[in-house]
Figure 1 (cartoon, one colour):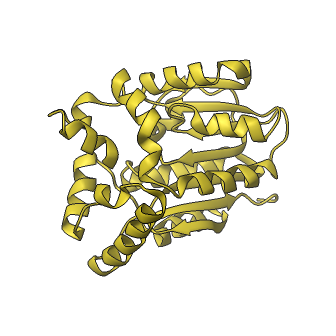
Figure 2 (figure 1 turned 120 degrees about the vertical axis):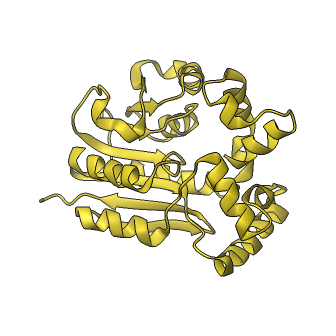
Length: 253
């Protein structure tokens, strides 16, 4: 992730060397990671609003890449009685999530595991009313991401909902410069420094993604993959290279 890379370079230590199991890295990201994406708050508000219209008290929601539990905290405040299983492969992040969500008791269950290998993870229920993935799938290879989408479709209840909020691929040099104008505008409005984490040129942008192990896909690719499985898909929010997609599994399949 770009911001973590910038922080740790100043200390002479790369984020990839420390890893997300490092408690200090996890705490620093939890405290400041949202600062690189000022559209995140609005997109999460939309996600919570849409989810509130599709789930009810007692439903289990699966969060792929729950991190430190910030999304769960928002959902629990907005949607009474729901329960969330949060999968993440960072023990340090899950420790933060458990601490943050302790007031909600057994409404949150932390499950260690790699979202790229969902079939190997022991989950409390085989079928889900809703699955969410917030900034957690863009590090997967294309075949892994497509496999996750297939798993989600197979394990959603009829009428179930998959909400994906993630970064999208900048597909060309020309679109990079258009995106950069949008990033600089956001930084000016919100006092952030997101544009610098994306790189000053398209070449720098691609090099940063490779360094971080990120492999975002284009909006068109996401839509194609989801629709090919049978999902009905709508783009709920799109700003630059950050998008929120809703994919609904039909009631009769």
